[in-house]
Image 1: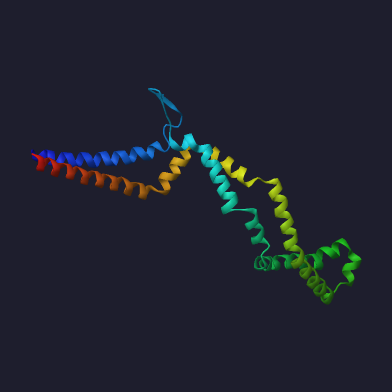
Image 2 (image 1 turned 60 degrees about the vertical axis):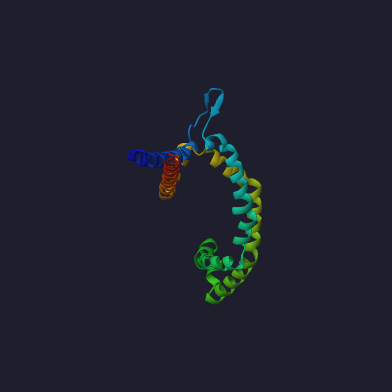
Length: 202
């Protein structure tokens, strides 16, 4: 057996493995439009199944990843309500000290620090009670007006194949290179096995 065949066969197998990996990745997105050839229709996996992917991901996001029930539980949580109270207290204090007096000058003349403190305390206590109720109602109304699943589905269905492909290569460039090298290495090993088989048979 010629020594150059012992080199060519493994290198050729490695190249085929690398090219096959590259072509498989490309087939995920290309061709974008259906191509008819010898009675077969060829089209990239994502362009062909984009609407189905969009529906599945829309349902997944709305039901599992970002449901209105989770949003409601999060914003009405006692700890989160407490976090927003300092902001509310600041606005209530501003209202009692300035805006109330501007709107009703006579009332403003009779409101002192003690009265402001008492009113602010009453307002804050009431706000802690009604804020979760208000937000719960808001989320329920939002759920009626906003179809989250349909919105996500529409966004994914509208994403261009070119944009998705570019983002994939950008996000997974290292992993894709490693996958190509791995397929090339596997091809090289297969080539070596072929050489050994040929040597045994000759």
